[in-house]
Image 1: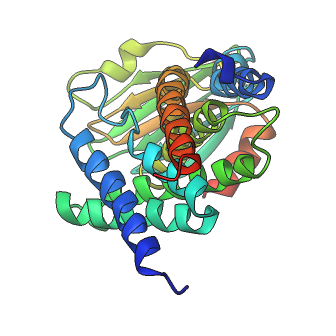
Image 2: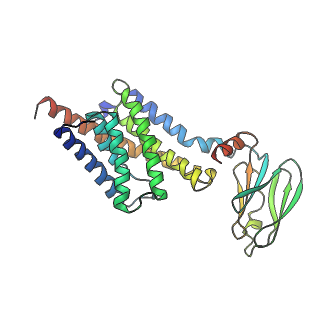
Image 3: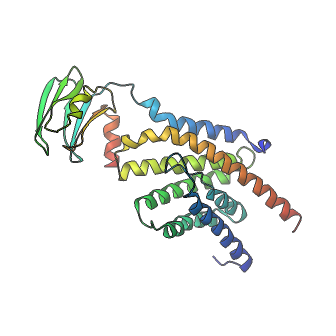
Length: 172
Length: 123
């Protein structure tokens, strides 16, 4: 992939936003440690819209690697959970992203991504670290969280994308 | 903002909700077909729920006796200090379990075929 300097600057900006949101989110108090709002997906979804799905993937995966490096947990169990959840969520979101438009908005895509992320995390945690039937009980409450958080992220992304497109049309 | 919501979004939200609550719907409905016994995280035995038996084994701290009666299982005697496993009483529904932490013993009630396949994939 050869980037023009303008494109490289925008890519770096999206990565920086995703990364800083991901790391800062870690310090927000929350009911259970694995329930995060997932604001970094705003930057990932915007990157998918602005560039293409491949660049969105790159930002999502780089965010986990660099963020874990910053938080000092690279290759730890929680890193494995984050990475597996992110990859699964990116796959689902990009599949829906192709069919975006008439029937699906970013809000639905975001909800699907949030649910996939949390569900895959729970399944991987069950498969690797505990027994699956010990952790599957976390799924219902996590689903409610995923729908609320996913909808919030989707609404924000939709608003920012609308502003971006009006700015593009006005050639600012 | 709400104008942007499409039909697909509602379909996604509802199907996600359904998927998320699937374990709650699927569980606790069926009675156990068998009981798996795990010692130190390893499966050592599998007792059928249909046959009334007593099963004794040597765990870390000593002897543990498990009884199966009328499709349910319980620990009747244990070498552990607190006897939490004994006080748990009978289990009989799929997914229920008796744990004896000092002995590292776990008894899980299981259904017949589906769960066996599911566990097989994970292991």
